[in-house]
Image 1 (cartoon, rainbow, N blue to C red):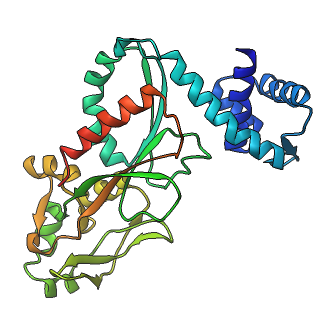
Image 2 (image 1 turned 90 degrees about the vertical axis):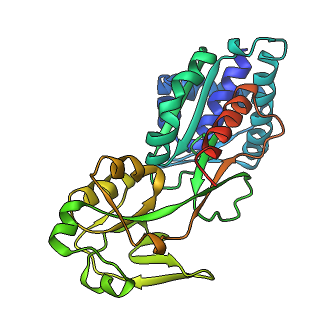
Length: 299
């Protein structure tokens, strides 16, 4: 068990590239993490990490041990639940990341029923608009929307999210409602930009064959989904977003759907997880539940 704990600490240091960050993630003193890795190196008779004042890097031996160590931890995790016939007794932590709208509108409202069924599980749910590094940051799985780049990770396609165009009643009262695409030249679009790779500063629509883009001016650019919706509610311009985040606000009269026939292209939704020979039973159970839940809201 002592060796297993040391491997866990080494793996977190390797993934986060920092003893301090690993200690914070594990809820342990930095000194205990550093000592565990040092003792592990002494037992193995090799250096696993290059340490500098700024960063920690794997040595060639460290890279080999890191890959095998992850497999060993996954297998140990599986052994812990090998003879459990009652899934309700499965315990442990699951780390998952997804967008704020996905978490707020779909997943969190249904988590109570999942945790009542598996009361010994803990969920660490990260909600951010940036694309996290699943491996380096130690996530078990992530939900991603939009087109994916080839990353060597395992991808489970869950469907697509329909998108539409929104404006607030206050904005439409001041600027009028656009009834055709030509009207957009007299309107404002709220720009959404997390980084250079995810910059949305044009009105997009599907013409039946391809995605068309119309440049539109903006008085505000935001970098997260919460701010994007809040800016629209404040009457600062038009946004294009999935229906899951706006349908309730439309029903409450806080937002109005406009130019319905010119919605932005649907966004693919995927569950992404590391390529490991042995996923723990708790992660498999959670991913199956999460996949079924998200599919209920996609097409």
